[in-house]
Amino acid sequence: TESKYHKHEGNLRTRSTELESAVTGSSLSTVLPASAIVKKSIVLSSESRKELAKQAKVTKEERRAQIDGRHRYLISRLADGIDLSEQQVEETIISDDKFQLIEQFFAPCGLKRLLFFYQDVSQQKSNASLRPDGSTSNLPQKKLFITMGSTEDFTGTCAFFLRTSDEVVTASNVSQEVNFGMFDCTNGNILQGLEFFLSQIMIPALKSQQNWGAVKEGLKNSQIQEFLYSVDKFVGTLSSSRQNIEDKIQLTKVDIDIYVRNLQNPSDYIAAG
Image 1 (cartoon, helix red, strand yellow):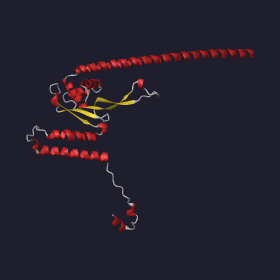
Image 2 (image 1 turned 180 degrees about the vertical axis):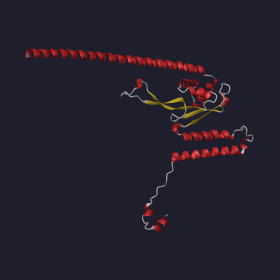
Image 3 (image 1 turned 60 degrees about the vertical axis):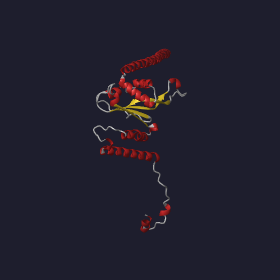
Image 4 (image 1 turned 60 degrees about the horizontal axis):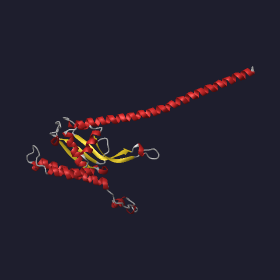
């Protein structure tokens, strides 16, 4: 009986070993296709990137076909102000994911302003430029892009277009309906940029203005004089605020110990005061 038992146990162990080998083998056979699946997913990912690039190219060409005299006016103003070629500005605009804001700006009762920032933007290096540890590095690069002005930090140059009415902007009236301006806020110094824009550009332009619409007296009108005075005063306040922020107010350090060490009674305090 004992001999049969050992023989039976040996058969069980043998079958158990065979079963384990079979399971292990099946596990290995399961792992191998997984690596193949990873390779397949990489291929699919590469194909997806190619498809996205293809779609982006189609979108750019569709937008390029939409460009007319209105867009050309914006492009020429930006190229002159930022010192880029018109071709560079055009490529930037049709590649921007906020391109639709331009159409909203042209529409009747559309956006009142259209903003462009031109400043350093962090750009990731390509895979070929990875660091030795495998990480990527961000390189600042000048970039022109459309913005709402409320989501990105402003650290460079702002170019803006303002509408003068709610009329639809056409190729024939764009130069009358749209005003262009710029102010420089390099290193994020917005107060200084705004102060320069108002004091060196806007106020001289206003003071040389001859036609004030319904106000026939022009600069002799008391309301216009009051308005110009208010603008001058605002610029002065802006300048003072900027200087206070930049330079701060340094109070003189005083050694008060020599004044309080001999104070003994209320009359001493009154005299010190």
